[in-house]
Length: 95
Image 1 (cartoon, one colour):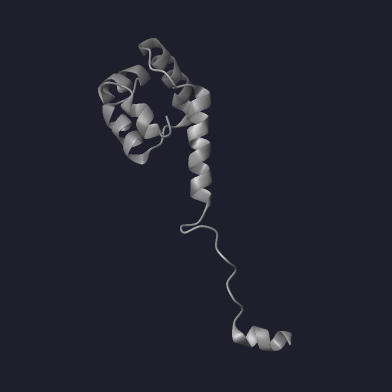
Image 2 (cartoon, one colour):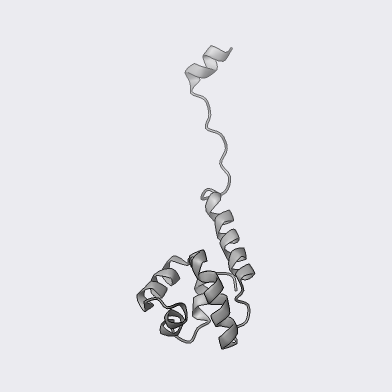
């Protein structure tokens, strides 16, 4: 699984996941739409997945998803940016 969205979709219904995590179904919908599962839910989520026979949901796999998201978030849109050019007056002062 490559996203928290995919993890949530591994459950047959959001209501089942909500029951497993002891939270409101609306909270599960919010996590799905944000593609984010707070770390405090990772251990109970992994345990519930194991009980239900859902493969690929472990604390380690959730951490990998979070790390991959963080790497994408830190890179500016369109890739790395070049430094801004100096204004002409600064160039004249430097020479």
